[in-house]
Amino acid sequence: MLVSAKEMLTKAKAGHYAVGQFNINNLEWTKAVLQTAEELNSPVILGVSEGAGKYMCGFKTVADMVKAMIESLGITVPVALHLDHGTYEGCYKCIEAGFSSIMFDGSHYPIEENVEKTKELVAVTREKGMSIEAEVGSIGGEEDGVIGMGECADPDECKMIADLGVTMLAAGIGNIHGKYPENWPGLSFETLDAIQQKTGDMPLVLHGGTGIPADMIKKAISLGVSKINVNTECQLAFAEATRKYIEEGKDLAGKGFDPRKLLAPGTEAIKATVREKMELFGSVGKA
Ligand code: 13P
View: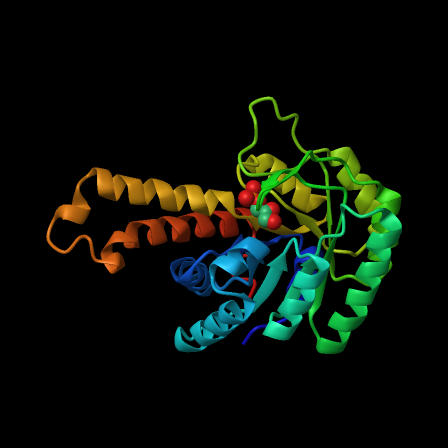
């Protein structure tokens, strides 16, 4: 059964670990993430960007697939199905499609408009028992063709949004989606600390989990990060394993071209990445 992310994140914040959000792209991805979470007895959040939702034939297809898969694979750990960087319209589509959680990314609006729209969505999600993530201060890098420069959020604005009753808050602390450039100065722990002091118990979300060194991840968790998003790293792992399979000519041997065989190494690589992240985030055995 799908659940809201509220309980798993409240527990994570109190227990000083983080729950991973792994973005899904297709059936193999979804199966790999769910099976790894079950194997490790870890709560998990499946992230779906608007672009990935469109690719997978719409949010309803995704929600129905995930629900059916949870049932047929016998998944017992808490699973939240979450819209990643949702637009205002996208949020309503996911609420209707049967997601259990949404992110409204109003970070590009003036703060007053971000507050107004977030407040409205908080009321709607509360009525439906869903969780909601809001964002202050844009995350750098590229996501679905939108390039953000990455900025540190204003802790006072974070408090303003947190006070609206959101479940979790994403705040820019110098993090970037995709690979980190060579000259990346690292996360701003000063900003994170100031945000946590203003927002108290609010679970904080770290986007751009790909490529952040383990020591920085641990420090971020110690300063209140309870949800970490990973997308690109699973894509890189999948692509590398698939390339290796083809370069070794395995698709040409016997029935190696069968998609069940061709996509298997990539799927295993996603599982290994998810496992490594869950171990690092400390969510293993916390279901
Ligand atoms: P990465 O692609 O850098 O892992 O970021 C994922 C993310 O933050 C999704 O919102």
